[in-house]
Length: 70
Image 1 (tube, rainbow, N blue to C red):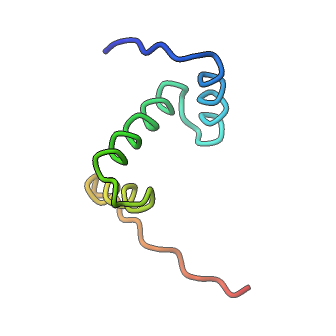
Image 2: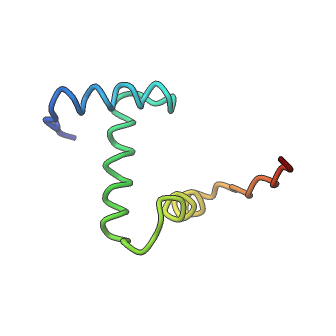
């Protein structure tokens, strides 16, 4: 494990995002790093496709929600 030096503005964005997603600041940063790495190594996949594949690989059943009438 090591330290990552990021500027204050990015740290503030990580802190704000972590409260919305109910993650620690470190967990939020790790999530963004992991997603960024997966996006760079799988440029033809969308964010949603990447998340779906990661959930599937973890054995999480993520059935689509039913479509609601407007």
